[in-house]
Image (cartoon, rainbow, N blue to C red; front, side, top):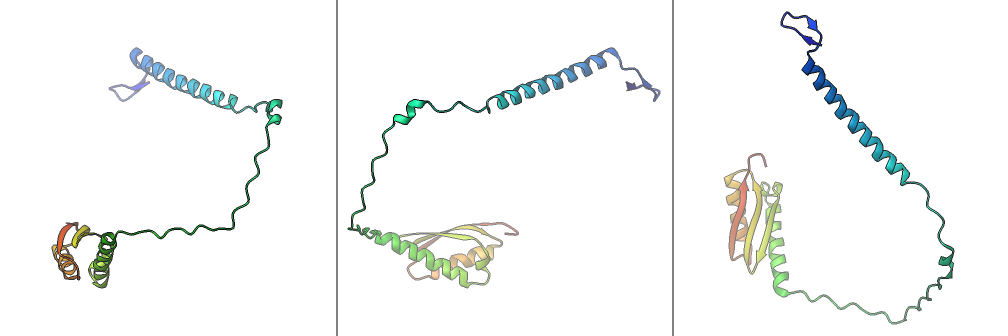
Length: 155
């Protein structure tokens, strides 16, 4: 049924009835396909037969050798001295940021390589960005600072 121009309900026109019929056909088809998939899934869950009798003729696993009394000491990792210096420099800059009341609230990542320090992250104001650069430059061992900090309000 549809609402006529006069505001009264009238029987649906022919093309509206056909549209509704095809719409129902789609729902019915979908329901049939879903039922078929469900049925195949249930059929696949049946119990399988017992294992074959020939499987009993398998040789038992070989016995495990007793561990030797000698314990091999792991060799100490040979750290690259330059990498260790870079990590220490990045940690020193991070500690300097943590000591500052304003900068400690920002997530600033530091990358150091041969005395060159790069700053990554977000800050809320230009003054915070400049302060981070000055604090990093003041740390012993820092030769240069590349400031990649992004200004984001509310960060």
